[in-house]
Image (cartoon, rainbow, N blue to C red; front, top):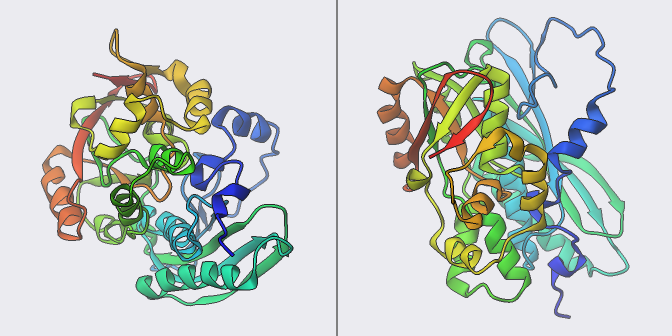
Length: 345
């Protein structure tokens, strides 16, 4: 039986995240209860993971991430989902130690062999990260859902929040943009094998440098770019750090195939929802074509690390990323004092 997993998805990968504006409204009335002193990072700045201090040298990093299929191949879907979930540990500067599987499958529609391949794909990435899948939970649902609860360890002094950027910091992006656009082209049957291979190469590459970057002098904040797009996650840094940011569009690393598709009008619905949620806080150059906006808001599944660091540390950050195989890593902008806002030049 030829099963196409994306036929079950109303929105694949991180593109199925709840839109920023809706999420803000949902959480607006959440009661603020007294938090334990040991909770170093909670929900206050929409960071990548929660961090709980165990002792003077250890803190636990806890996160979960799951979504519907972004590709048709079950093994590849499992790999992408697992890579994306573990990324949040690296984005906090942590080292992953174990994972729990989150599994929801339409058992009346998917053969057990397909489900086994999804689980095997996720397990293969966990093995690459050096961690076990130590348990999990599964339910019978209408759409395939797969992901992980990921747990890690970090030194409390090395936690890298998305609220630590400083005025004058340089901004560095670890992976090129365009994954959401490639996924939209895939669903339309337009993505060639070479484009699919590019998509898979980026979405299954673990952001392992995050652990080492957290130990570097001059690195002040780290996050990863996922469902809200580059502009959305950069704005989270700006709001958490109470800074403005300038982004140089010409310096952005972009996936060439994605640029071609978006210039032909192919993008995701999530890109439009993202812009509607935070576009008022983004200034684009006069006359900028719409496709540039679409790339800035394109939902990235298992996207790259976004690093704020002192200008003198930028060379070391780029060298660390590139030595780990992130050849497209680039310095793309900077931070300055001012109201939280993104200006694109």
